[in-house]
Length: 169
Image 1 (tube, one colour):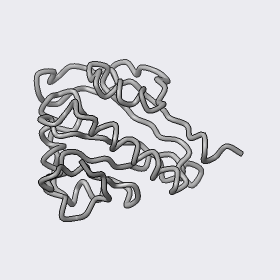
Image 2 (cartoon, helix red, strand yellow; image 1 turned 90 degrees about the vertical axis):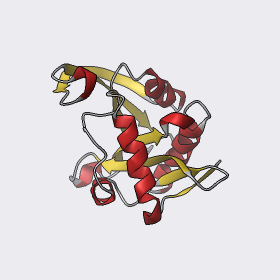
Image 3 (tube, one colour; image 1 turned 180 degrees about the horizontal axis):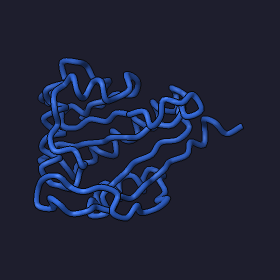
Image 4 (cartoon, one colour; image 1 turned 120 degrees about the vertical axis):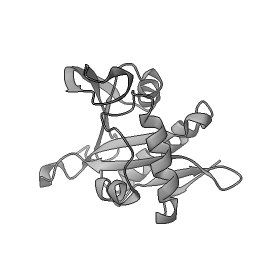
C-alpha cells in the first residue's frame, strides 16, 4: 500500500468509496456521495490523500473540511477518513490518518475534529488511536434521512485532536 496526494483523476474512486460507506448508515447524515465536484468543493485543497494498492486501485482516502470561515479558526479542520469497505482491517485507515495529521501540522492546523456516530466503533477506535479525545456526545444531533435508521434522531460523538507541534505558544 502507498499513501500519496490525491489527484483529480482519483475523484471517481473517492466518491465511490464514500458512497459505499454511506450505505452502512453509520458514516454520515449525508445520503449519497454526490459527484467529484461536490466532494472537491466541500473539502480543503490541502491535505488530500489516497491509499493505493499494488494494482494502483484507490482503497481509501482522507481529507479536511473547514469548520468555520472566521479567521480565528483557520487552523481548525474536520477530518474525513474513509476506507473501501472490502479493504478494512488492513491498516489503511491508520496510514491515512498518519498522513493527514502530519500534513495538517505542516500546513498550520492546530486542531482536528471529527463527528462520529457512537455505533461506528471502528472509526471511534481509529481516531482514539491517533490521539483524538472524546469531548462530548451530542444527543439527538440530527435526524437520519435514509437507511435502516431513517427517521431516527442520531447521537454524534465530538472528538478532537490538539497538535503538540502547531499552536503551542
